[in-house]
Length: 220
Ligand code: C5P
Image (spheres, rainbow, N blue to C red):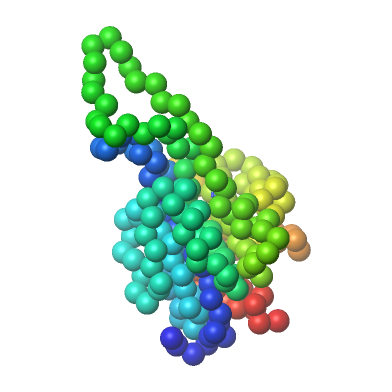
């Protein structure tokens, strides 16, 4: 571990999508490259943090030097997060699927003439809300992300209160922004002190700025 302001601090990061199986060859998922979560893990380690990285099946290469926990589904991610606490801070970058298929088929669903399959969904656990609202062992700083396409600040501000996290990093992922899957991000950091818009910058720069804020918050 490198020296730095986060030395001796344990930070949990979730990243990537989750995959919710329909049958052995099909799944539903959210779009998430894992790029921002990976950049955040790297930035935290640069400041000396011990990083626990709980990731779904993301395209991004896994960061070196983390405690890596790989999962597929939201339920597995929830269990992994519980198992990795306590932590000084937790940053939830994962694009968790809101729903899972109630009874995924053990065998491939066949195309049949004259019939379409019907999928029944159940709600997945909200990992960010669960950890934010823990009575015992809540990390001192809990950070969520809010990818929105409309009314970004209003929606993200409401989300912060609803989930109970300390900060929300809000970003506009409308297709025209090119942020989804791209190398840049334009975020607004929302806390109980209000909102602060950061200029558009590389995902690595967003990560370093956020990691610096985390260090400030944990050290004061
Ligand atoms: O409600 P929404 O999915 O937009 O909230 C996004 C934030 O909540 C992200 O930080 C995401 O990682 C987290 N989240 C979660 N578990 C879920 C859904 C979202 O941790 N089931």
